[in-house]
Image 1 (cartoon, rainbow, N blue to C red):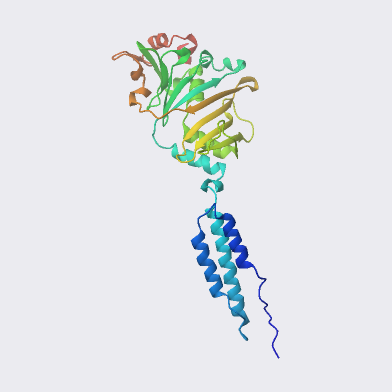
Image 2 (image 1 turned 120 degrees about the vertical axis):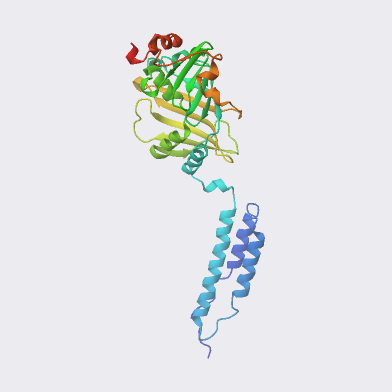
Length: 316
């Protein structure tokens, strides 16, 4: 009498299912040769009939076959589709932050939307209505043209904030003595990307968004702050980040202003251009030998600024 098989053969069709999955994904992943090898091994390892008295060897064979089939499916999943499909918005922003940590010079076209109530908080920026160029290198930056469409202004490698409205002279301020109007302008324009992106990663909810101009080579991320931002703090942002380089192609930053208003500053990446080190200093925007007035010459510095509301508090 034949002993009943305690471990019946599995339902037929495992190989067929795996092969069907392979053929369905063939256009997305080039794993045909690997799949053929795995299927050949499945066929070779599967016993024709169970051996009497060794039921557990049959179990092991079935388990091995299932594991190999799972390997095929996992390989198909990992190999199919673009690699960035498994990235999250936070992964993309973190990669952009790491890319911005160097000392590369990047220039952006800057546009500012300033609501009427915010003009009191930003008297200097209220003079600017056109498009400007902002170039950054680490903590250094330069804005051209400057306030009121004249000259340039920025921050150099020593942390000195300077304004050069004409080629004849410039004014320079340390961080501690910045007048309020100039301090607010620095707060708005200082595009020091690593700290900004760190803040976005910690305090914001990040979601995918459609780029303003949809492209296949860029990610678009929307950042929404959790909770109420402080005055001049970032309330929200939109980032478009190149996939291959992790460079920020465009950045729109909305900051809280007075009376629940919002200032919107948009940075659009310009073609990479070489910029001399002196472009980030006042000396690079005035005539050779022209003076740069600091706190040791307060009257002349005040004259160079040409705006009475730009006087440092101790000089008023």
